[in-house]
Length: 280
Image (cartoon, rainbow, N blue to C red; front, top):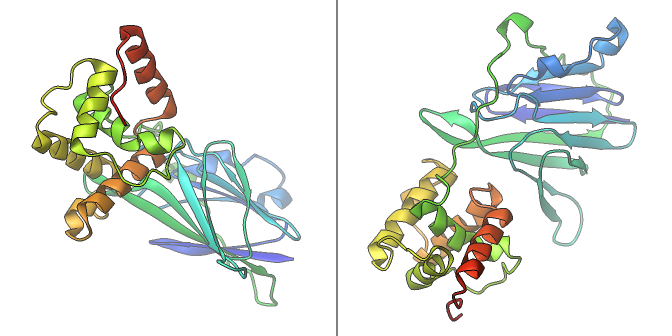
């Protein structure tokens, strides 16, 4: 028998026992099937507070069995799950996308929805803790269920993205290329000159990016969109510039500001123009 406890900022503690299922997200109550009263007690829903409008109505489905707890992900955005357990090194961190299922480790599992929490006119990461423990003798905490009259009926909005084929879009593509191409053991992020040359190769026109300051300005804009004001490394004012750029490149790929399809498109465009790639 298992007990699973879900916690988050502004969220009442939710506890599930074996045989129960919980839907959670921006407005998940409509995902609960209309069944018998007996089944209704075992399938519930809870809305996460302060969700951004681009967060899916149903993010996850938490299913508690007799011996395992499974997270089935329904959200359209990328989310990271990390956990700690008794093993050498003892940690794992995976990115889940729509349609994936994941067995949760015993102990605490941290779920981070990137840019999922509304913070004024911008976005922060939304964090939820899911703790899996063997069932004890204490009572199960009652779980709130949203009133249908208070449910959010608004359709899920698109996530904020860079304008396609804009200057910042191409800079983001150059920054994230190591992660998109599977060469993320690259020893350092690309320099301003390398970013300029990659964009000139892909697009044939590189705006004013031969000027290093213009590349830096574009990277700052990308960082603000990728991290939000709370976690923007440029606002933190610490760390080496190369480390900051490395973090931005990785985050840009993680939240899919640019994708492998975008990289393939850029490479095909360069091939059609029949131009040689810049030297590595």
